Length: 240
Image 1 (spheres, rainbow, N blue to C red):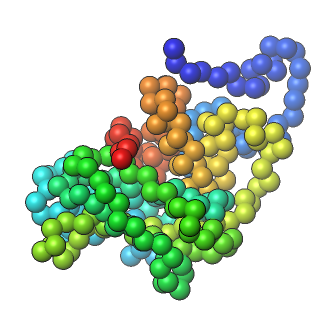
Image 2 (image 1 turned 90 degrees about the horizontal axis):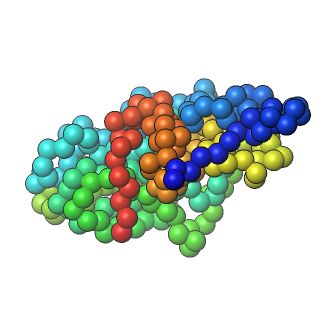
């Protein structure tokens, strides 16, 4: 049976009671699919962002694919997060490579963490987790990450994507009953607040657990579509 939930305001209406929502705009968001409202002051130069290097979208020996290597981030945006260990998501096209390289650097271009991640010969969305050994991200600091496919050693123009993230405190106060909200309601609030990594991570976990749930699928598709990545909504998650 599909997992469904009844919005809290529906229950209230049936009981004849009336509650004041802690945040009217958040309440409106909770009634529909999850979307993303980008912050207006967090843009990157046109040369930056998560796009694939045009000259090298794949390893030379790889077959042609419908989608290229892509970072799941808003184009030209600094992705915001409230967590000190955000998860990062990248779509990998079909490849004969057996591993990818991930690197995280601070604003001073100092490498804080790097890892070679083994992969199988399959395409899908890869989730990169920062281990507990990495120092927690600091508030109001900007970080850069890169992920490249390790092709044949003879290929020097390796395909790679990059992203920028910043840990912040929420602009809007988190509602007092936030912990009682469903994951979809929480994701909608994060999206409305412009917190990309929080929204994506929470919704990705829901989609991985219940990809056939129509509400989850609608929100997952809508979130990626709002940032121009709707064509990746049906891609599977890689598990190694």
